[in-house]
Length: 223
Image (cartoon, rainbow, N blue to C red; front, side, top):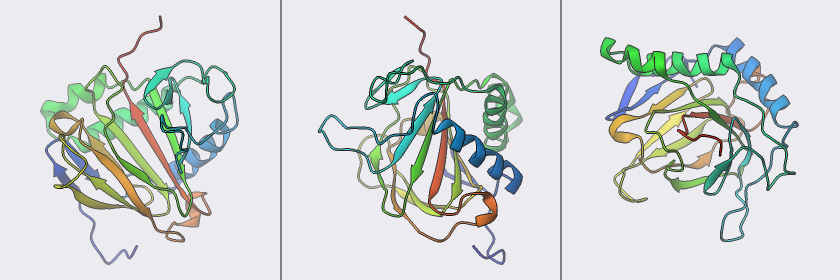
């Protein structure tokens, strides 16, 4: 991505905000190191199986709560049965900073202070991986979703709250970009139709592919 082309902060839809180049290279490198560690233990990264029997092309590992289509549990019953690692405090803090950066109105500062994600989904996209249009609706909370991108550039398709089709907006997410969606856009359909191989900055610590770290507030309690 050429530095000559400005990439300003943009509100894609009410409550849906794209903040380019939000993560520093040091922060990206740190996240890559941690993601590699999370991908091996206590629960391994895997391609989740959909109810149709098909496997997702994206590889996923979770913190806090284990996600599988379409529910959460504390244990990864589809990936060895281990209990997932907790969301570390520093990652919660990063999520609060992200919400504050996205919603710059002083009236929203309190919501940023209160933002406490208890689940993180770490998704790895190789050259051919995609994510179909879907809603994040397994949560019992309408708190904003924080999405961080590292590695190869992708097309992020952000749609409406009623169906998977138009109207939608395609946003180019580059390594270091932040995307937050909450408020009226919290349950919008969204997906990743394409990743562009070889577009990432190797200085971020990821030589190939794309990492997406998604922070969520589930609103769930242990039984």
